[in-house]
Image (cartoon, rainbow, N blue to C red; front, side):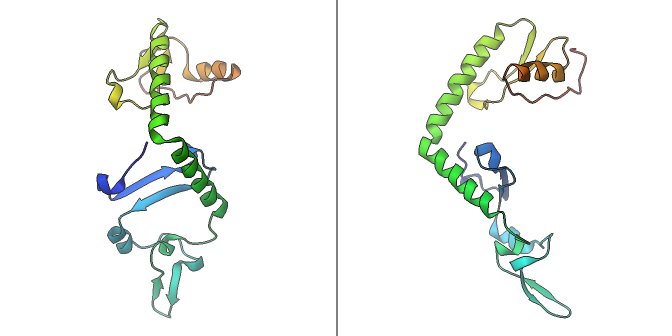
Length: 164
């Protein structure tokens, strides 16, 4: 979804690039400039050092202050291409398709009496993630069976197991 950090007035925002079709190992950390300027770097090296003296070190201005070591240049280029690709398609079109798929999936999954579906009834507050359990079947078994049939899911054993 499209996010406006100024509209949110958030101090920090973090996201993984691979969630938007970029290569693995790249992401974004947005932070308000005044907060980032007050923070100390947690890694040292590379061009993030401005000056080193016997008793003092000064750091380069943002964003270099937090960029120790060799940068993931190919990841940055891939992230830029992924953002361009998504913007070319359009957030509105992606959202429309996701809602159509979610509506269809919810209708079809609701017909299965052996499946517990965990989804908000408020369509406006739901993302494209669908959580469910197959009654009496361990989630890892469900994931393995679906995987063998070309369906990729993430499985997690629930902390509450009284429904199994």
